Length: 232
Image (cartoon, rainbow, N blue to C red; front, top):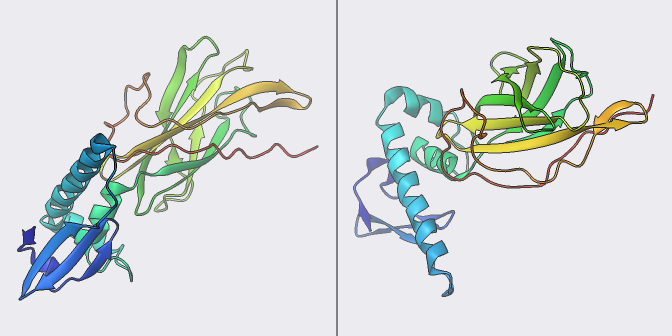
């Protein structure tokens, strides 16, 4: 399709699954040729995601404040704010680790989360859920260092007992509203509380959420990375 977006004038090459061509002064955008697939529903969903990503990027560059934010992400592969915003929409954040070595169920005990995104992690929430599935508490984690978005700290709001089997659930969000959730389960080990099998991460907001922003596009699933408790 043709585009009159001045940011894309003269663009050429491939960005993700999009191919930019300039023919006779007109910039055209099309999908990268792929082999025919039987999964037409997946193709349709994929095309729809790109359409929404393009709409999101257009809104961002039309807002001076948002545009200036996304201009900070310009690099060799993303030459302008429009492409940075589009990539941000297409890529969900990731909760890399949940470190509960300093959490013993006391008020004020710290839970540390490492979360990353291709552009920016804007928010991290933590929920503590009992073995029976009851929400014990939930709240916002804070950047460990103000102005950064990788290390986040959550402090327990209330004391909790009977910790084995308790679920610690962390969810990270980015600017477009994409999210990823990861959880770890507390268990009784030889040296007190240790981590049990965390399973796989799940996408979207917690079913217990009261403060979480809505889920956006492009959430992803991946295996949990669990920091091991060092030997005493």
